[in-house]
Image (cartoon, rainbow, N blue to C red):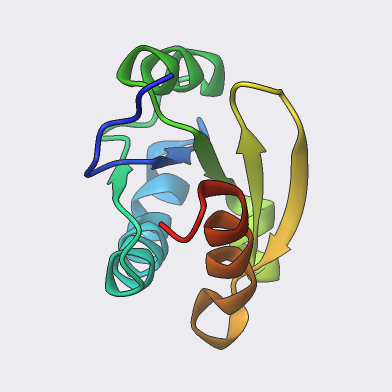
Length: 112
């Protein structure tokens, strides 16, 4: 599989009431900024659709991974990291500048 050079990962926005999701947008954008600063291409899904629709979008775009952050994850300072080709998923902390998430993405993507 060939991944777009600019976007090996995608941040999925969990479907939620608009007020909850709108309040989480700074979280998504900060996380995207941290990943980009580490040299990892990322795209934030532009609207709060069902997660399944977002996975289909990510798959069509050739993303290797999806980072899922719903209201519970945002509150806990964590995300779900899903590897799209294999379907595996793990909860990852995004504290300390998202160091754990960045390390896991780099390890799997070969130093993205």
